Structures are given as C-alpha cells and as structure tokens.
Length: 74
Image 1 (spheres, rainbow, N blue to C red):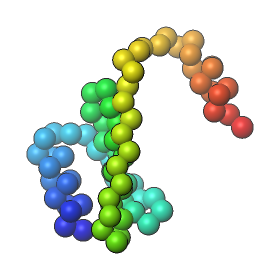
Image 2: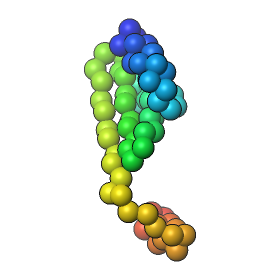
Image 3: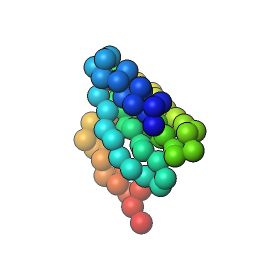
Image 4: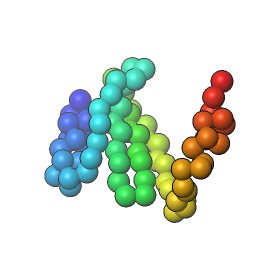
C-alpha cells in the first residue's frame, strides 16, 4: 500500500492525469501523458505490473471509426 500511495503522490506532484479502478485483485491506475497511455497495477502481494501504449504519431480522420468498430465487434 505504501508504494501505491507514494506513486499517486508523485503523479499529483507532477500534475499527471490519472484514473483509479479496481480490476482482478489489483488497483489499476490509468495514466494519460502526451503520446502515451500507461496502465499500472498494484497487487495485494506487492508486485507491480506496467503496460505502456505509445502513439505512432499518426492522426486519422473520422472515416477510420467505422473500420475500428468493425475490427473489434463480435
């Protein structure tokens, strides 16, 4: 719990936007920074998992939305 609270303090000190959520047996912190998104999970057994998503720098217009929905629909 100490590590989690310390990490949240650091995010706030650096004015980094985050959201908290509970998933599986962990506290999930979703973090948004320019060009990236991080998912940081703090588990009860004190291990931490980090997943980092980086933008490829490409921007798309609204026409891509239909394709994205098709690709990820049942």
